[in-house]
Image (cartoon, rainbow, N blue to C red; front, side, top):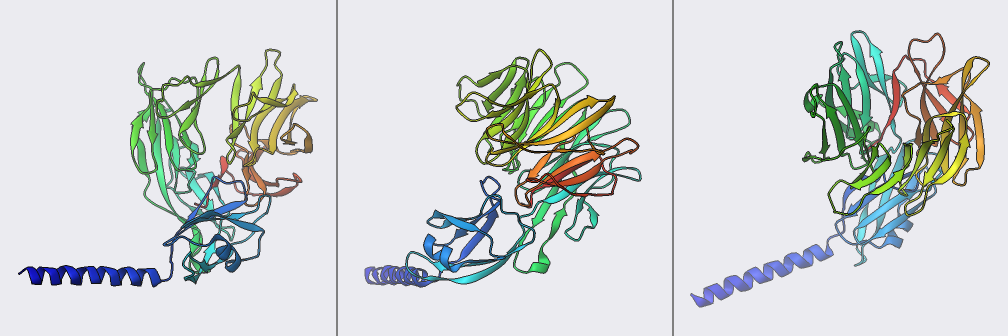
Length: 440
């Protein structure tokens, strides 16, 4: 009996040893490909391998077509492909991944198509109400959502896997929905690249509300602020990308904005802006006193740009760098309608408004990180649509805004070169707002 047991154990150990040897001599595999939104370049892709890889070998043996300036970063089995900053990407990329692991085993060449360009998403009036639509690469528009009464606000998820929206009915009651989206921007064959596929529209927060506000970060988390029709019915809820939910005990005087990288939020109060964690750490929150509004996050650096309102009715634009006091970039009597900045906080775009000759005129100004005016452009005959957003696309080096002009009953989506501020196009369709949807 003991001899049989010994033979079984010996056979099992030999089998394990043989399996280990087979695995050691097995070539490495590319396990996953994940777009990385939090980066300092034009676009980035995280590649996970089954084995620790030689960074230099992967960089030397892999190829991009077109051959865009890029670099490889990382170590072990997780590497990142980073397209250089300020490199405009106008088409999909054919990616060949190859190289050796630390045992000199070669990775069989992997061929993929990757399109990091964001999608143009619009809130569009249609017969019977409003509808969320996306523009395909060939210029055609396809519906993502069913027709709703009135879409008051749209917030694309930072990971490209959905869009949250607020619907308002004729009685001014608001409902909050989530539209799941399936990104299709990394495929084995070029003809499989396509606009995201929409899932079924579902309630994000059940019930009807007097008001609602939404915010998302790059992880795809959502923050929903809702207020009912009775005193004390206000609620702030964090909905994680994995579906987990948590009610937050946060008092705010306005919309709360999630930090792009996650973990915290900018909370407006009656005496300034507060930066606080989403999980209580019992530390004193960072407070920036004064009448300030958050303009935009500069995603890769933790920087942000703010609009400050002065008692003499002037406004200033401030750049906030972690650990330093706000840096004033601009001060004037014009109104600051909106702000946007690049990922590194080195370029800031502002739409300024002034009344001249009984007419309102809007101007787009490009500032560097030191407050020097690099370029400026009058928007005439167009006006920036009140309540909409100015958004920078680092992939295509372009700006997206919603514009209008006297005589129009709706807005238009407008694209502008981010460096020269030259108009690229103004799309003819009637919309309420245009937004970038991350490729995911």
